Amino acid sequence: METIKLELDEKQHGAFNLYVDDKKLGEMTVSIKPDLLTVYHTGVEPEAEGKGYAKKLLEEMVSYVRANHLKVLPLCPYVHAQFKRHPDEYEDIWKK
Image (cartoon, rainbow, N blue to C red):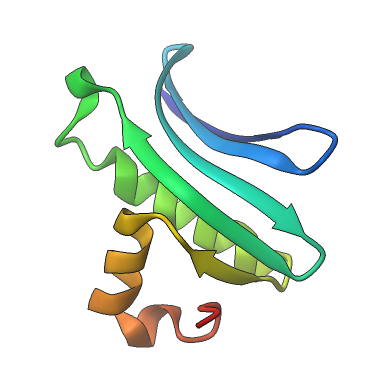
């Protein structure tokens, strides 16, 4: 079973980590400030590629951002590409 957990340190740096059967197979590295979530990197382990895990991480991050009324600074190439590809879907949260 897949689980995504937001795991942060005391400085609000960390990641949305994706686990399958308690094995970490993907992560989206972020930092959070009071009004902004910065995404630095999205990665999936080679054996887990092609299963839609990066998209699931993106969806989890977007849900979190909307629930907490934040904006997203997409420094991660994957997230930035998705925001550019689907601007209407992310217009409300995209910090340009």
